[in-house]
Length: 287
Image 1 (tube, one colour):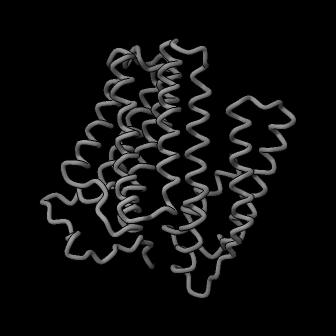
Image 2 (cartoon, helix red, strand yellow):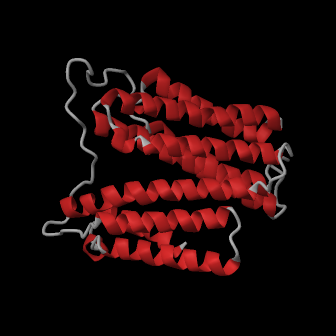
């Protein structure tokens, strides 16, 4: 079975290969994926136990905590971990590694602990700090490499920071806003990242891993699908009228499903590393 990889660029003398003692801190996905997995394993049972009244883990475990941690805790760790790793391949330059990466991972972990145990204001300060620092780290690498094509990802990370800040402000009643709206905004931005990046890598991985496969990638249709996803997500966040929201959601689902159909998902059936990507992407039109 062939492996799916993002090729490691050949470094030049200015950017030598990783020479640290611990491979865990060489690439962003290693600690951040691990931490995200641990959060999922621990937080979901804790939430279920608290919700059903079986166990009082912490008074901070509320519906708002659950929503926040799944979006701005778990999902953000996965997104940032991927972007740091992909950014290394896109540019040939080092994204955060070593102590820099360890500090970011520790900050993310501190935010999870603060959200569970600390006062709201302290949790907000620690939690909000992670995304802008990650975005700045990503910006520096992309800017240094002149990689404008992926600079929009920094903008999306900045918007996720705003959404996260709005959640904390709403939770502390500083602004007249339900905490659900920033969570919806966060989900929209994450789905947008998945739509764009998934549309780049899934067809490529499929073609590379399955001989004779040529996925149908139509840039114009891709742009239309992404635009409709944004429109549907914006309608969801800002409370569009029911009929309009239903129409936008239906169009987004159809456009995304047609996009996925062109990637020859049926040819990925014998490759678990491949079909899981297709199945994961399929949740966008299903959702």
